[in-house]
Image 1 (tube, one colour):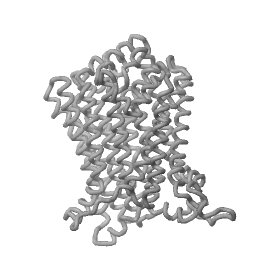
Image 2 (spheres, rainbow, N blue to C red):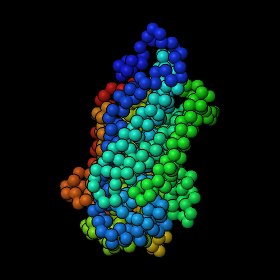
Image 3 (spheres, rainbow, N blue to C red):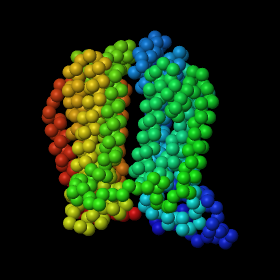
Image 4 (cartoon, helix red, strand yellow):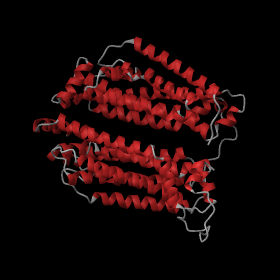
Amino acid sequence: MTSATKTAGIGAPARPGTAAGGGALAGTGTLVRFALRRDRVRLPVWILALLLGTLSTANSYAELYGTPEDRANAVETMGSPAGLAMSGPRHYLDDYTSGAMLGHQMLGFTAVLVGLMSVLVITRHTRAEEETGRAELLRSTVVGRHAHLAAALSVAALANLVLGLLLALGLGGLGIDGVDAGGSLLYGAAHAAVGLVFAGVAAVTAQLTAHARGATGTALAVIGAAYVLRAAGDSGENGALSWLSPIGWAQRTYVYVDDDWWPLLLCLALAAGCAATGFALSTRRDVGAGIRPQKPGRPVASPALGTPLGLALRLHRGMLAGFGAGLFLMGAMYGSILGQAEDMLKDIDQLQEALERIGGTGIAEAFASMVMVVVAVVAAVYVVMAALRARAEETAGRAEPLLATGLSRGRWAGSHLAVAMGGGTLALLVAGLGFGIAGAASTGDGALVPRLVGAALAYAPALWVTAGVAAVLFGWFPRASAAAWIVPVYAFVVGYLGQILRFPGWMNDLSPFGHVPRLPAADLDWTPLLVLTLVAAGLVWLGLAGLRRRDLETK
């Protein structure tokens, strides 16, 4: 039993008058405090990131579209089917104030991030607890059967309510024309309601499978399906498909336009229904098992599983497939508006200045080079997750039996790094293909396909450096491994937002992504790519050297 568990008082003997069967929710309050203690850093980072990102975006919209003429030009460009698929329903365009613009263009995007936060909270405090054996240990004390799920839902609900309140207060205090207090309260409530829906979805998926990765992946697939339904409905004529998505319900509040609260009732009803289903399903399975029976394995394992690289590929294949499909769709969505980029951006002075600094022969090329930064950052998210998988295997105790054989630490960790680096490169390739195919269809220029694929692959050395940073942290400072997330976050802030907000050039130079030629607008320069490759090789070697010199850590 961990010291944190003892501190929370979970493993203490029952006090007089407390029965061992004190109800299905016995111990929920203690588990809530325990979960909040474990997430005392994780949740504030999530909430502050979403809050600051929203506030900075609202200010940017007020500056970029400060006049009615600017907003009228935005209406003209965002009214296309591709523009509506990437933003929201057409009704927002009827009165396109800064607030309406925020609800139209940001609500659907941040709702996905809020859903991701909620899913991770639920699976972390339910299925992951069972997978590590801690839940079974705690249930041997005065802890009810439903206490873990109830505590996880309570923590997720608290996080979403705090986020919604801070969004309401922050946006209401900006003093931006069109962003009033009533609309800001609805904006925050819409995020909280969507977060509760996907927390309920995760409560169901956590009962279906015996593994946290499977529960998380299934819930994330539901989020992706909700976004796709919303996008398909908003780009159509009647928007019927959007009513099948909780993200579409949140956008149908028409925040800062009509301020309709009633669609949030649909979100609350679905959230309550999913939570109730999760509780009901939990009574139909054993602790540590899932509703869905595991498929029996083959009588003889594949020869590939006898190698560290084959095992790593088997462990990473689901996440790699998900990121690959998502990046292909992301590239295709951006490529579908590439032919309209010049009309969309011609009247936005700050974006024009940013595109001019990038260079190129046209706005479409410069716009594509800016999009490539976003694509590369998303691929870097996969790289960090895959590179840190070795740390998860170590702390879960699964690495120690492998390393007790003839397998060396270098080969074991190197296989995870190889999959991370190779998988990230493959993700860039499929993103470039999606971007190129859709861009060629949008512009009528078939030559864009190889050019955009090459532009995406140019960021591969930067991804390898990202994996190298994760390797160094894992090898020398394993408890600080999560600091590897700084690399993609910083790259997005200075590489994408910094181009618009005109950050100093030295800030961009601190990121490995800042040294990649901005193809297809810029000319190809092999020197920085070779240097980044050498740096990545050095970091990987240093990280593996550190791993060989330290003891394994298990929880």
